[in-house]
Image: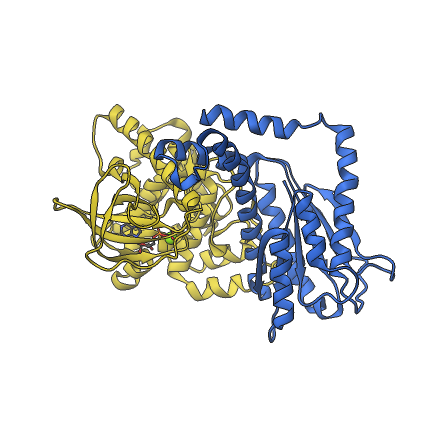
Amino acid sequence: MKQILLITDGCSNVGESPVLAAAHARQEGITVNVVGVVDYGTIGELGSREIADIAKAGGGISRIVGTPQLAQTIQMMTRKTVVQTIQQAVNKEVQKILGDGSLAELPPQQRSQVVTVVDELTETSPLRIALLIDASASMKPKLGAVEDAIRDLALSLEAREGRSEIAVFHFPGRSGSEDAMLDIDWTRNVSEVRSLFSRLKMRGATPTGPAIFKVLEHYRYDKLEEHRNYLPGEDDGAREGMIDGYVV
Amino acid sequence: MGMSSNPSYPAGTVITGKWRGNRYVVERVLGKGANGTVYLVQREGRRERYALKIGYDTLELQSEINVLTSLQSCRKRSEHRARKESPLSSYLLESDDFKDRDHTPFYVMRYVEGRPLHHFLSRNGASWLGLVGMTILEKLQTLHECGFVFGDLKPENVMVSSYGEAELIDYGGASPIGRSVKQFTEWHDRGFWNAGSRTGDQSYDLFAFAVLCLRLLNEQGLKSAAQQLPQTRSVEELMKLARELPDKKLSSWLCLALKGGFPGSAQAAEIWRSHIYRGRKTGHETMATPRWLKNAFALSLFLLAFTLYWVFRF
Ligand SMILES: Nc1ncnc2c1ncn2[C@@H]1O[C@H](COP(=O)(O)OP(=O)(O)O)[C@@H](O)[C@H]1O
Ligand SMILES: [Mg+2]
């Protein structure tokens, strides 16, 4: 499972549309969730519409919260998205067997079994989350809270049985040509990383769209590596076999 | 996903099960939470009243039902072995879908008459904590023996009868031991206090229970400790609060639970029983006749260690 979690506080203003970028992500099997962080005032109609649209295009969830709720919110969103992704995959399998029966229409016994499978996979499937942090000037006072929230998320992920990894990006990058900068590459123990945004320089523009594209590239690049290291299709095969085993 | 717009059904509404056909008449709303609404209902044609939970999300509710079902059969097995029937085994009555309304899923459970723990204590006084705490720990112990952790332990999820018998409600946060904790509340979460992982184990519940005690006895202190920056938030702060409590045995028990020092809930419950529940009733008697000596050797060793621990601490 792959997710991008975008944390921002306003509108994009440079480059491609972030909604387009999110649609691309979805196409590649990556769910995009968005959190808008506002402590004073509001995010504005334009900003909140963009946040909702990005999440919709990316097949994910969006929320607008203050810094005190940030940690809890991203923990909840991540979990919910994992469950949804699994549920969609499982539903597909269920439909193969039962025509168009959704979970709610299954008889109790079978529903209980399907949910057991969903719970199992929610806990054990490998998960990757790329955090994409808006580091434009207005975000500066909130970055401390963002960092705490990331650590908190890492703590929840570390408790999972399945392999869970986080990568952290911020945008804009160092120069005009760098849309987003990788702060931490895929890791399983973020809680041990001392400072997440050590080399951070705040700059004005907000190239949200190009930044999402940059993360997609990173995901793609990594897939090549993955294929070299793992047996191809290992996860998918196990997953489908398991569902069949339970439901049939 | 079977999301309902969660309306409150008025008194008199008949909830008919789609699969099993039983009919329940709504008397009133008992409470609403994040996962569902709970109604007081009467099974049509019978006198008994039950609590009926209607979920907002099919998957979440089914997951909760699954936990309750496996707990039920685990308890039945152990009661069968002990040749007794306790009300515990009949907590979950049945689950079904609301026939007429979008097939919204629901389950029916025993109606726990009483009030939430924090209301009970503020009305009856903190002197009840010894007794109520013991029954909570016993409930946790049973749960742990069945291989589950409760997860979201907080005063709102504990109902107390007028004579101090506690019952855990809301198993939405329960998960098998060794799995990640599904649902938690910041103050009660050991991860929030930088005091350990979010993997469910017996100590996770004991930690949450210790915070629950602090919250009941010094909510203001807990609140200000929780408002510190995440980096400085630590279990030390909680232990400081625990040490300020007048009952030193309770202080020691709480500190040990906060540090994850109990081997399990069986030992934690036993110590609570012999040092806090009994110790309280008899005032200054320090070392009651150790009934527990009859128990496992390991346990008595641990009790000895605990006794030394609080003797030397103060
Ligand atoms: N078995 C029960 N007997 C009496 N009251 C109950 C029972 N179960 C739940 N309630 C009441 O309903 C409220 C919400 O139920 P709960 O299961 O905690 O929902 P949620 O999972 O949404 O938090 C509880 O806080 C309590 O007041
Ligand atoms: Mg509840």
